[in-house]
Image 1 (cartoon, rainbow, N blue to C red):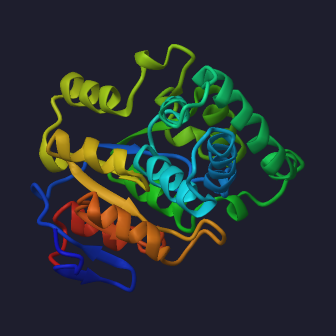
Image 2: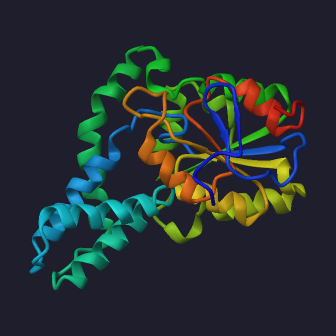
Length: 281
């Protein structure tokens, strides 16, 4: 896939591949962290530090920079899947280096404890009435409002544990867009995946092609959308501020073969008008 867009719209919408077809979007599936929410911004650094520290305790002769590269690669490749899969991979990497890995669930809860310490002040701010917009990707509610006006049914599917996703969507004032269609990681991790959610939507509602769009900032969302012939919309936003291009993330999503990449959702009406075939450019 070319690293150059075949078409540009507005100031920060880039089309990289022809769409399956362009018609009204009946169902839309969203990732949460990094796609709509900034509450957990910085989670990658927390996970990376944990993974590198674990590998440094093995008999490996690799230096810290090499271990950071190894961990960064698998964390990125598994972004969008349930956290447990990154922890399973961590255990495998520990074993490969002659270490004695812990149970992946132990790694997961250690990570969640570290992350909670990093984001607790954000949760407290929102609970005390802070402006939700400070913790959303720019234009998130505009995009969801535009979809609602078009009659699109929205679903939320996250690799974060389901109880946290539900609570944080409510804190951000986004839960009503999804009603009871919010899904996340579970202790029985094999009972949930974004692939299953999307396949069930397609089957239960006879959805095909461009009638389904998947919005996310990870490999998984792009792969899932393409696997069912839907539209893959990648968002490569700087999570430190909630808008503008994150060039590293943009490169990764382009490699994953997203149909469209955006820097944020501030041009949501233009984006949806194009996706739904209402305009050509």
